[in-house]
Length: 153
Image (cartoon, rainbow, N blue to C red; front, side, top):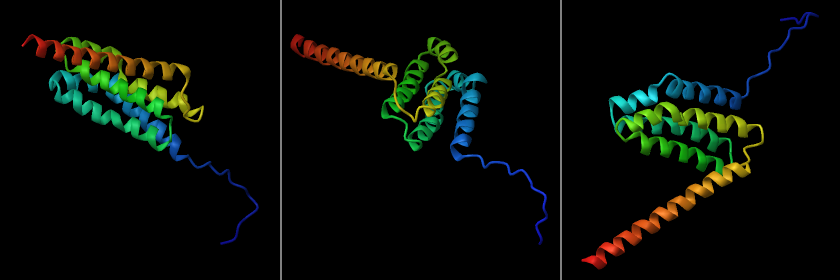
């Protein structure tokens, strides 16, 4: 086949990472904007919240594949964990699910950090550090409580 002198505009190939971000945004919109996540938790208390969290891990998998900072990934897991733990509570959890929107938060985190090569900001470090400190404080209280109960017996 002969090539004529006419030129055709070549559409640039879409990068896989762009497609990943489009899929992440669509998933987050379906789960949070169209209320699939809160409805699953409402209809199937506990189980629906767990299923929503498992589905939300797709966003974290994309972040992992893109080599986003572990601090960002920890923050995303915290968002899903908070959504799961509080979502399990009857009525209060459902109201929390409507407002918190963990998947949209995680999609926004991924998109915003993608521009900076996946590096964490001071705010990301502060949130993860605060969560770690809170976890340690809760564990200390639990251990202290168990010791107090054992001593009382």
